[in-house]
Structures are given as structure tokens and as C-alpha cells.
Length: 176
Image (cartoon, rainbow, N blue to C red):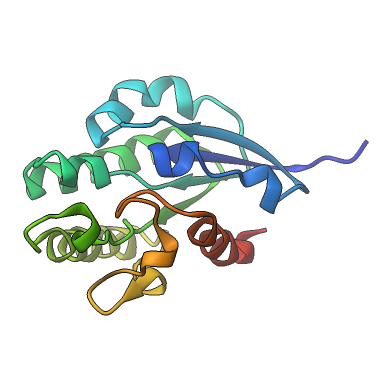
């Protein structure tokens, strides 16, 4: 029996519904995505999650915070707290922090500021990762068509279609 690389994914519905085993059959996947979760929810459950042994941890959280109208400074602070708590618990495990994805505001019927806010949050998240010398995976531009998520990558403006998941998997391939 060979030892498989173990990857822990932490996030919301985008993560929960990602059929990671389909794309990475050679990897032992632990999916800790929970539909509807926010950065507050991840902070509450983080102690249980970080004790799961893994070779790599992939983190993406915050889109539900944005969609629920949480303050941008609170979202950023929570993301940074999550990162710092993960770092205090892991020893030799690589942490890959993923940007938030864009949304398709037309499909969501939103007033047009969501992607601007997401870009701002991603910029702050990247700056934190750069300062801590962490791996930051900027997925945002790959999903864009103009100023919003390309329609073929989403089912409803926020959740991913099979094409969206295939693109995300392609961007993750470099880590396996």
C-alpha cells in the first residue's frame, strides 16, 4: 500500500460540492467544506479541523460573508485570524490560501458592487499572505468574463458549474 498525499480543504458550499476525488484520485481528500459557512463559522470549528493530519491545507472562505453584507474589515480580520490559527497548529504542512472567486452580478441581480468588494478583499488577503510568505492562489482572474464570473462557470451567479469546477481543478493541479 502506498502512502497517498493527504489534502484538507476548508471552505463553504463551493468546497463542499467540489468533487475533488474525481479530479485528484491519487490524493487522499478530506473535504471540510460546509454549505452556507462564513469566516465566523470556520473560526468556530477550526480547532476540530486543524487537528486533522494533512500534507496540504487549502483554504477558501468569505464569499458568504460578502453576500450576507458583513463589513469588509471584519471579513479580512477573520480571514487573517483563520490563517494565523491554522499556522499555529500545523507543523510542516503547506497552507494554500485561495482567493475568493468572482460572482456573476447580472445573474444574482445585485447592484454591481460585489466584485469590487471581492477584489478588495482578495488584495488584502494576498498582502497578508505575502507578508507571511504563504502560498496565495489567485483564482479570481481565471473565472472572469469582463467584470464578472463567466456564465459558463456558474449555475446561479455564485455557485460553480461543472465547467467552473474543472477550471478550479486545473488551477489546483500544480499542487499535486
